[in-house]
Picture 1 (cartoon, rainbow, N blue to C red):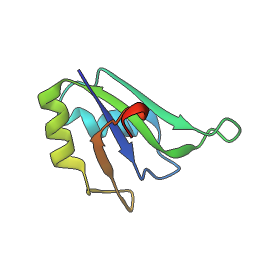
Picture 2 (cartoon, one colour):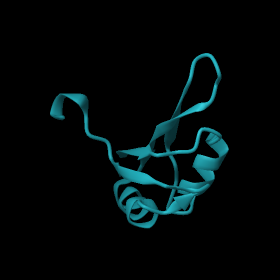
Picture 3 (cartoon, one colour):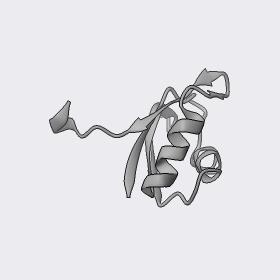
Picture 4 (cartoon, rainbow, N blue to C red):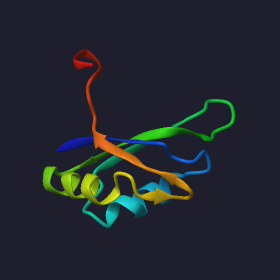
Length: 83
């Protein structure tokens, strides 16, 4: 299982949009869209968990792709301790 970081998301992105986008590349095991506590809007990033080969396919297919007017940033998550 691999965890992906998805960045540069528009503020009007919702969980259904994200699941639909990534399901083209395989089964989305889990996802978390980071939202503002007060407004409920997307803060511009989230995390997706997929199997390794599916995650690599999603990175290859979606990194830099236009999503509602913004180029997506999709990479493997880098844990805080390794930054």
